[in-house]
Image 1 (tube, rainbow, N blue to C red):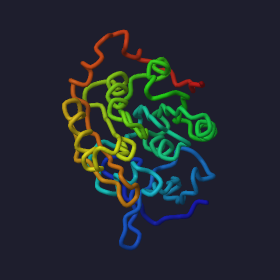
Image 2: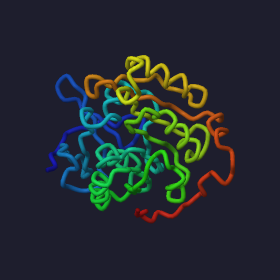
Image 3: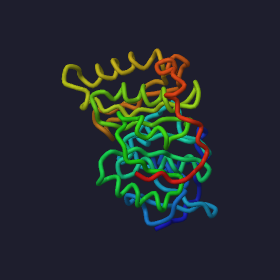
Length: 257
């Protein structure tokens, strides 16, 4: 149910991201591109006829990163983003809010059960375009995803960094494109502690991505970090074959599995 709020301050990085000061804490909101009911029980407020949804750090790693002073890229209005590991769509719906009605979020999820809920959500969130697929098998969905401005990755796999590198090299539209990774260190093996896994991931990504300072997501998400920045030209030399690059699809038809 919507409640009226007296004031939300726009975040400087995105016209559709806002903050409100509640007591001694700052709360995040995204301007809703869909309608009620809430996606996951989040609060809705109305300001000057515009609907905003609480962007909760405990439910979204991207929100947790922003709450922890993430200075890396954030989706902007009108952009296209590729989301790997969309699950049921909690964070994907907020990224759809951020890119707005003129943007698109190509949401990849490999598990049928959460994908069914993602499909249902997409009926109410038009920029959200679900695709049933495995983030490792990127050729299987390359015909459905055009070049994108940014890639957001939340996959609990030991080869998370390689998944990021291969998808970013194929789908980002140009050097300078955004790369944002919710790094889950618990899925990367026991030979290192979380900080060690972070250092290894940064070392692998640094030649290919101009990294922003990584942000630890505790206490919201234990053992997670938000990692990323803007793609360097070197990233695109990983897969230089023109046939491997996705064609510049411009249509907005909703892909189906």
